[in-house]
Amino acid sequence: MSDDDVDVTVRRGVQVDVPADVEERLRGRLVEFRAKVAERKPAREWMRMPALRLAAMAAAVIAVVAAGLLMVPRESPANRIFAAAAAELRNASSLQYTIVLNDEPYVGVDFAWMAPGYRRLNCSWGIEVRTDGTTKRQMVLFHGSRNYLDESGKTVESVGDTEDFAGQLRALPQQADEVLGEKWTGSKKLIGYRLNKPPANTFGQGLKSFDVWVDAATREADHVDIVVQEPGKPAHTMHIANIRAGAEVDRSLFDLTPPAGYTAFDTTAQVHSGPVSVPAIAVTVGRSAAMTAVVMPMRGSYAQAGAVLEGVASYLKEHGIMPAGPPLGHFASEEQWDAGYPVPPGTEVEAPLQVVNEPAALTASAAVAGQWGEGSEARWSAFLKATIEQGYVPTGPPVEVWTGEEGKPETQSTEMRMAVRKAK
View 1 (cartoon, rainbow, N blue to C red):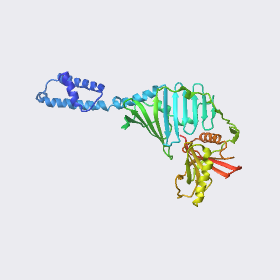
View 2 (view 1 turned 120 degrees about the horizontal axis):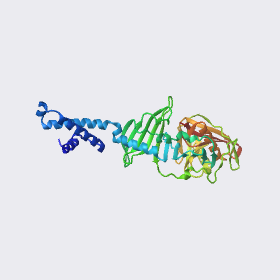
View 3 (view 1 turned 90 degrees about the horizontal axis):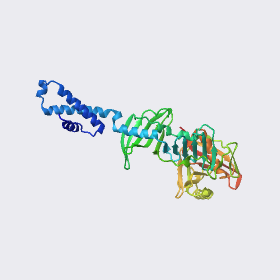
View 4 (view 1 turned 45 degrees about the vertical axis):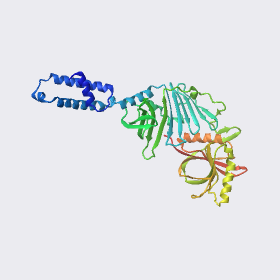
């Protein structure tokens, strides 16, 4: 069998596409096989064997050898793609991504890291953490009230650490435990990989799955899906996307100079917002009851809330619907908020009013005496800070419930509520 015959036999004997390095190794095995046959003394069986059958045997040997070569995980193209993605993350001098917890729109984090130790987390609930690990400095910004905390000199461990998965991504092993297969996202072909145990020294108890999806063309990590569930507790999902390793990062993200217009947060007994003095917030966490409410969807300034409530109250009175409690408002943002009254279940209304049904949920709450709306930003900053310090993160928009009499500030109080979950 000549060298040309070897090439033809390789191509015919393996009915799958193999990488060039595997084909070269296969060719070497076949040459060895040919040499051993040539060295053997011609037995009668070999002399009588038709050439076609001899070629078939050679092809069978090739197929077995090729299968063995392709079954070696470290040599497979799929695992080389994963290894390339893991190496890029491990060796990158910067890393950026976004993460959403439990698919909740109110629990998202933008993350940026840059060597040697700069980090920034911008949380969807209005808190941003900037850290310089080289100088042990850290600043926490409260965007709602335009306050900040300078935590220089403290151990650099912020409330945002619970959502910081940079360590996991940068510690991916060289090889995955399973190949999940392929899927298409738009024009991108992705290959999925599963780790059956967490990257070294990065995760505690309860990891159920750690799936990494890699762009087959660029060999870059596209997104990561993580599921964590501790015994007796509900599962939590984490979706890490928009991963950018080694890309240029805006250095201003790590600036520890307080932004213009932000004032230092008073961490003693009082929280100040302009001339208003607000007591420190005492937050309790418990399970709220289910509730039905009639609300008017709104956008724009929250100052419209009073007029909105008057309109809803007028509608309910005209239609003989008795409110089931004091007025309330849900304030996701100035682009999406509402105000109205709780009502009996089964109540029906006409547009533009809406009926909302809120299920029972784990809820953080605090009551503050004083005029409705006064010092609201400072109150909510203190509320969020106290909630997170107790180990909880928001899963819903801020809610206010107002009690007291209109025009009599001395009778007024505000209950702040927010659906939460235990931070991981």
